[in-house]
Length: 158
View 1 (cartoon, rainbow, N blue to C red):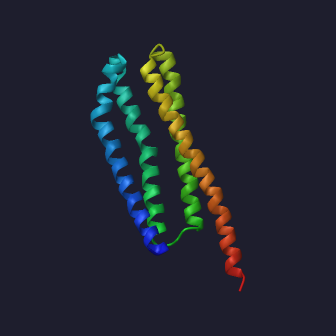
View 2 (view 1 turned 60 degrees about the vertical axis):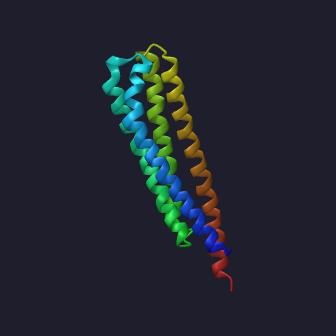
C-alpha cells in the first residue's frame, strides 16, 4: 500500500467520522436537548436553554466544516501549507469560543439554576471538550508550521 493510498483511506475514514459526528450533533439538538430541561428541573428557562444549545452548535459545526476541508487538502497531498495552518488556527479559536460559551453557561448555572448538578456536569464536560480541541489544534498548528519550514528549506536545497 502506497503512502497516497493510506492517506486517501485515512482521509475517507476521517470524513466518515465527521459526517457521523455532525449527524449525532444534529440528533442531540433535535431530540435530546428538548428533554434536558425537564431533566434539569428548569422548565422556566427551557427556551433559553434551547437557544443556548443552538448557538453553541455554531462553533462546533464550523470546526467540523474546517476539519472536512483539512481532510480534502490531505487527499490532494496539500499537507503543510499556509492554508492548513490557517484552518488549524481557526479551529483553535472556535474551540476557545465554545469554551467561553460554556464558561458563561457554568456561571449562569450557578446563579440561576441554584447549582443544578447535572447541568453543571454537562456544561463542564462541554467546556473541557472545547479546551481540549483548542489545545490540540494549537499544537497541530505549531507542528505544521515547523513542517512547513522544513519543507520550504528542503525545496530550496538542490
